[in-house]
Length: 132
Image (cartoon, helix red, strand yellow):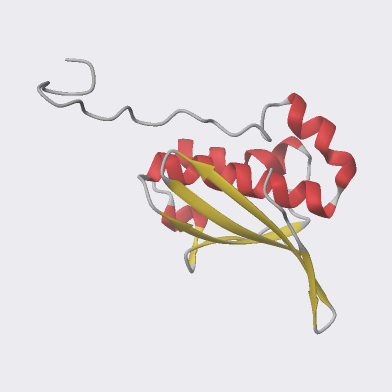
């Protein structure tokens, strides 16, 4: 598991978490607040067009009943929108564990702290694709 950190700047405490899914990487900063989720400088509802992706991004906060307790500021790079939503989910879950270590059991039981290691298989030479 990657190292996470807690930072205090001007009396504000930030909890960091990194999530990965396929080729997407999400760097998440969690702060005590009102439940705002900002992704790449835009509100999550604007960044994620599909409700499925919005629910996926909020799932760690909903699972632990912390939806209106923390603000999330995330920087997401690489991959597609589904991979980015999955990476954000893992990043938020890891940051929550950094903020409240007793939540780890609950998040792990729901599978939110497990990195999905599936990647696209590479194309082989003399073939039309990875397996054909």
